[in-house]
Image (tube, rainbow, N blue to C red; front, top):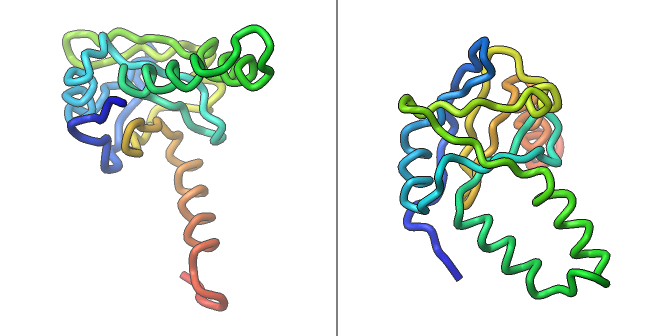
Length: 150
């Protein structure tokens, strides 16, 4: 199994320009390049207000996971391939490290002019900032001791 030299970490703010481009953070671009990813893979997230982004390493891991299943008679194979692979797009990066997000992904995530890049180890998410704040607040409430408020 492949193991990335470095995980995607940190939370970094960014912008979405009028042409639908985001500049992938330089640390994330270095990790993608180390994985020989010709850009960045992006697909919808199960988390409202976010997109999943990743490199070749995760794509290969996912492919290996699916390859162990029967591609004709496994409903699990069909569902996972449909939900992830059929919706994943390889987005090239320009000379400034920008990727043009497809309009349907921008609309689905609810992006306006700001985004947040959130490192999650083998992948990162691109979040709509208000949705990220809501998710952070919900996680803090769920993980705080009973009766404690923040």
